[in-house]
Length: 93
Image (cartoon, rainbow, N blue to C red; front, side, top):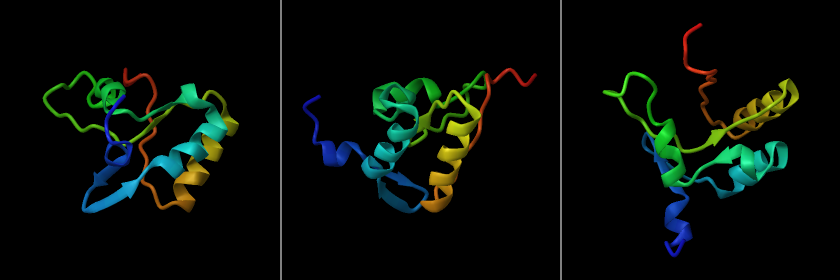
């Protein structure tokens, strides 16, 4: 990964640009490094579901495994004023 890391981790959401690195570190403290997806290449698979005509790449994806981890991640999002979308398996069941 030879890209400029500063540029890689600055993501514009709406009209606001944010450096996600400090937030990602907080998420990693809760779910571990393998539980946080945030490189552009890894995020491609999360930009759509079965409806592939609409795509929106998220800034970060967090994969908690327990109720406690979910609560911690939601708390971080709340304290950092980060909107989030909770998602299950995407089946609608």
